[in-house]
Length: 470
Image (cartoon, rainbow, N blue to C red; front, side, top):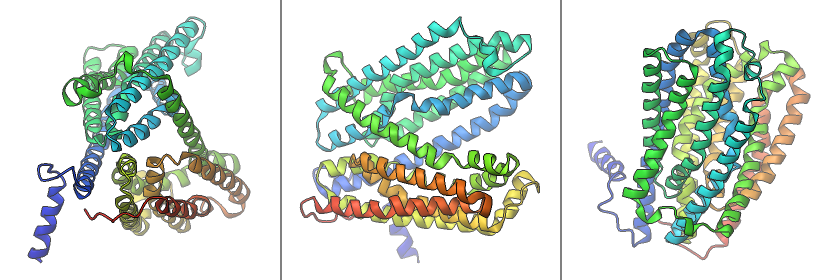
């Protein structure tokens, strides 16, 4: 047993060492991709743990400090963050994809042009957002937006939302460095700086509470410190880590900007389609069965969603790795990796879901008490859906890296329309348990099987290549 495990441990540890890797060979580049994938996955997991930890600490502190009404306003503004993720119109994902391909061709000048053009595009969007805020600021009764009544809450509504919008606007161009790091397979740097931002945000919240400052200061601390961390990340990355990629005015290109806008637009449509396909369940349940039925579905769904969260850490770094490999024509590595990643992700998700399936009722009762008693068929459906979702992860990352976004948009539209229609028609007859089965069936029919066919055709278009083991 020892003779088997020790070499395996050494193989795993070698993923974090670069000194022995020869990047002039295909095998060496494959090893470097796996090293960066492992680093990015671990750093992403650490960033998520820190994010959850800071949230768990800050929630009771801010609730006690602000009181129920002002805390509700604070949470409403936090909810806007999810909605504003669409505000970059997919350009961030376009930057990631374009840079990964340019990196595979060793075109540093092209990468600089993409980065410089992205700064201009996102800076323009940010300036527009601030200009709209400035023009509407004195004409909108912001306290009515949040429906607050106390004098203190009413007086803080406008400055708090102003601080929030300004912080978000600043984060748009500063996010270019994070997307660039992801595209260069240096996502571990982006995740580590995200950790720094979350920790600084928590320190800022504690400082505001200590000095008894108001809600606008709390927003500035919680939303502004991650922006400050992103600014530091940009400064250090472009002056110390990769000064050769520093954005320059002369490197701005309308052609590159238009390319990013087109690619970003495709990602934007894909994001909207995904939001409709995957995010409409609670609305359908509320409309058809009443709001009380939402909890009986959403709470078990959150439990099983942890399987997707775990798998996502490992799968996400494959996106730029596939883009770089395909740009070099190393399709053998891409083919082998997408198969291995799919099998591994599916196995991991299945193991987690089986644990939740066996102990689901107990875990749910331990979590929220006995008010929620989901049917076992719902748990089976959620397990089937999350395992299926894990099987789709690596193919999606491959198609992103290959810039096959139009295919995903078309399949996504079919999934969204068919799934939403079936959910509306069948939920009253079959209950909430049918929803995950519908999602899995539609996804397999319109994406899972077609995606594998698409990838096989894509591989066939490459010249014959040896499959590189790593």
